[in-house]
Amino acid sequence: MAALCVATAATAYLGLSAAIFSAMSGSQPGPYMDEIFHVPQAQKYCNGSFLEWDPKITTPPGLYAFSLGLLSPLGWMLGLPPSERCSPTLLRLTSLLFSLGNFYTLYLLTCRLNSDTKLSTPQQLLQALSLALLPVLYFFSFLYYTDAGSTFLALLAYLMCAHGRHGAAALVSLLALCFRQTNVVWVAFYAGIVVCQELDRAWEEQRSKKDVSPSDRRAPSLWQSWLQLLRFGLQWLRSPEAMWRALAPAWPYALPLGAFLAFVVANDGIVLGDRASHQACLHFPQFFYFLVFTLAFSSHLLLSPTRLRDSALALRRHPAAALALGALGCLLVWRFTYVHPYLLADNRHYTFYLWRRALGWHALARFLPVPAYLFAGWVLSEALRAKSPFWRAGFAVCVTAATVPQRLLELRYFILPYLVLRLNAPVPSVPHLLVEAALHLAVNLATVHLFLHRTFQWPDSADLQRFMW
Image (cartoon, rainbow, N blue to C red):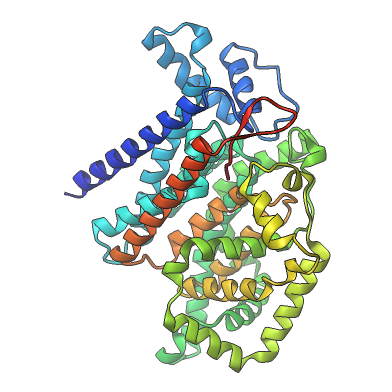
């Protein structure tokens, strides 16, 4: 029965995606936006020109190699001439294929990470469907970008890790790095999960020796978690035997992590091309943007009258801490906000209008959302309350590493952190998931409509311009 439900859901997902794919490729048959770099580079690979490289491309050639391996035999079987085997439309099919893979991998991850919870098959499928329809991810299933493939491989590595197949996870992680270098953060996260399992065991063993009452063993608050983590971590660092016992099971991940370090040394940096426009910085508000992004796309799941009441109670109980965090947030926004030239120059992206109308319309406007940042952080920490403090600390570090060095405000940077968070938060009920899937579908249809029918032109170009994420 479960297999039939999965097949039905996958067929519906593929049918919807195929219809959107046909409409978008029919309306925009040629390369658009970043496709003007990716499509010609893939076509060079299809023609056997492996040593030619566009210096504007920043990511490794994994996507192009995959497209070559898929489309060359497919084109041969269909009788297509070599010049047509890597057309923009066929190249985009690789993204659509990865999108279907994302749906199924999210389903398997939902099942695995909630194996001790009695979830119904509709609940598991709706969670996967809703996450696969995340608008910022789903939109790029119809364009030749790295997002769908990079996300699929990162999620597949996570699935292997969750099943304890760390050798396979390391190999898949290596492939994920060939699509996008920043996936190294999530490779480290998977290794950290293995370490956390041993730390959790050792910590519970230590707490049981102290004869803690069952009522005190509930999940600690955020502040208690950090204090306990620090105290236990210092003890752990003093014991080489304990460190080895925790680190040894994670050794397979040394392969992709070592390969990444070798790449950075050989390449003299992380980015391949266009380095002047992709310089790392300490853009701390990116972490705040991620918090609001996650809360915005999950507000109907994470917000409730009870949670709002609890947040008000927490504020009344800890006003000094709230003021200190607010002051710190304002300081980080003041000293570490960066505005990339691309953000101000390209009015085809929604982030252009987000900055112009919400964050950049006045010098003080960027400080107004600080209370929302704090509230979002509190809500998300509560959503992950059941996870161990080691897990939460590792996740926070990885989200910081994945977002803060990025100078450009780009919502696609938040896709993987969002998915990992949602996969590890409690799975909502079927009615809530139905509402979320419907909302995601509505947003997707709206953005596709804007892309197809709200075109415009720049004064210095005859090409049609289209709105997109």
